[in-house]
Every structure is written in C-alpha cells, then in structure tokens.
Image (cartoon, rainbow, N blue to C red; front, side, top):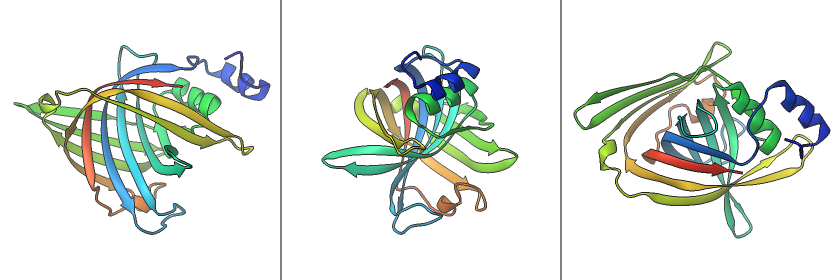
Length: 211
C-alpha cells in the first residue's frame, strides 16, 4: 500500500487489505443482459451480472454481487463495473483504494442444494435493508470439464476523473446453466427489472489474478 497517494493511504489504513495484485479462487454465476435503450441512468449496451463466491486459497474469502458493462476503448474490449456489493470490509476498502471500484457492503447469502448431478443455487443481496436482487441457478457442474483461460481489463474512473485500467486474467471451467434473476424495481438495479438474460453460465474453479 506504500505507493498509494496520501489521501487514499490514510483511508486504507482504517481497514487493512491485501496489496495488489490479488490472487483469488472462486465459484461464480454469470448472466449476460442486453439493454437496447438507456434505462435508469444506464446507457444501452451489454451488461454482465455475476454472483461470486471467493473461497479459501485466495487472499480473501467473501461474496460479491456485481454488474459490469462491456466497453470498447479503441481496439480493446474492457469492462466498466457500474454496481458492486461485497460482504467484506477489506474487499470494499481495497477495491476502492487500489482500483476505483465502487464497492459497497451488503448481506449476500448463498445456499446450494444437490440432487444427484444437479445443483440448485440461490443467492440474494440486501443493502441497508433494501433488496437488491435474488438469483436462482440450476446447473450440472460436473459437466464443466475443460478449463478456459480469459484475460480482460477493468476500466474505472476515480472521483477526480483519473482513469484506472486494471488487468484481470485467469481461467475457469464454464458450463451453461438455467438462471432466474429478480431485480428490485425500486432498488439500484431497477434498470434490469423484468429483463431476461441472453446467456447464463456457471463458472467452476475460477482462478483470478486482479491487478
């Protein structure tokens, strides 16, 4: 944390967090939505909604609910994280200080039931007493055999207008899943209310290097 500006270093000292880069291990559920016109202050575009269970083996363990928009910046495709909640104060502090990711705190429970090869996973998010979203996923994770590499960058902007581009790379075992999301109409994700994903995946055994 020694290379942070003084103001962010002072804030970081209040809640310790790991230095960049973060090596993380996770299970994740991802759905892709298409907004064909602007809604709720969000421009038209392709958005990914994910619930992530960061597990033992990485620098932090926590749950995360996020929305990211696909951007084209010159020849590159990047992600802009527009909405994100975690249930870990160190993750919130680190995400904000290191990479300008606007993390907030929320209750993010996850439950999973197994019946033979099929798993049904339910998740939800509540922040400040307000429902954010719920999700239910049905998958056969044992079918996710091939490990697929990925590499992309997150493109964020600090409050003073400074751009922050952060590489993220790793691998995962993807498998299609059935997803049912419900977004609170009067909540911060209300712009996704009533929409259905065009694609949903369960991402097994995610390995991620962020930063």
